[in-house]
Length: 272
Image 1 (cartoon, rainbow, N blue to C red):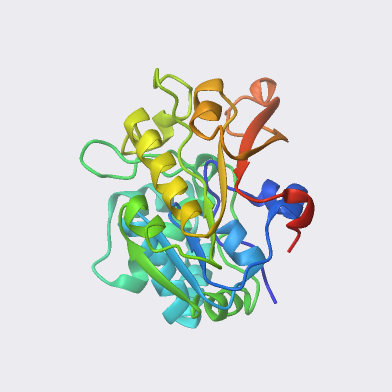
Image 2: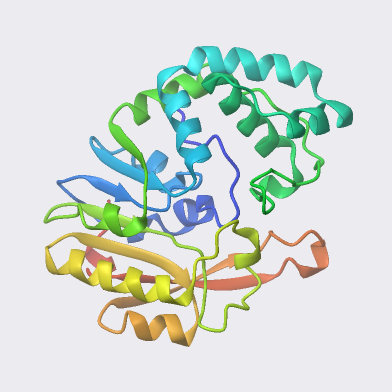
């Protein structure tokens, strides 16, 4: 069964799954994720029931197509793989199809062939990332079909994170991976997000997390390893997580970095 995400995503959590899966707790209820992105943790855990959301409507629509039309989508991407070139990339970038399956195929094609898998749009909502070096568009046989099976157990929604976290109750596991904003809004990361995730949002998120924890849900927040963020979760278990940073376009700037994990349970007894 394929468990690899079908998208590359700035801030994606493949590294967390491969290096820190011991942090994920055992849970009997629903898996909840309000900042879906590439869904690395969801696909790794493949829970029996899930609620997945994001404010990026194009992203959620793409997940719906993977869930509902994996074979048709695979066919579209195989064709785009054969057509891929620099000129085809920029033609595809400029045109948004009218059909749902074709829009999802375009989204995945651009994600797999653009610079660093970055999702970025301009003030008009137009995707504007230049072409990258990757040329593989299609997926191995049955890869999307496997992910479709996992997604059939999930409800997908385009909504604000607070609405999603408010659904969490005792027995649920909530994994939260927001944009890494700090109070001065100058951390080098928010520029990759088309809608600014403000410091006020960080405070609102921490409040929603604490309410979910009070209702008995297990919560893991991945966030910036910064003293201002740490103070928001001073009642939670704090874990420093080290990883390599690969988002920079220049290899000399891709150095080790750390991120923070905040948990309302003991990670020593949490392994899933």
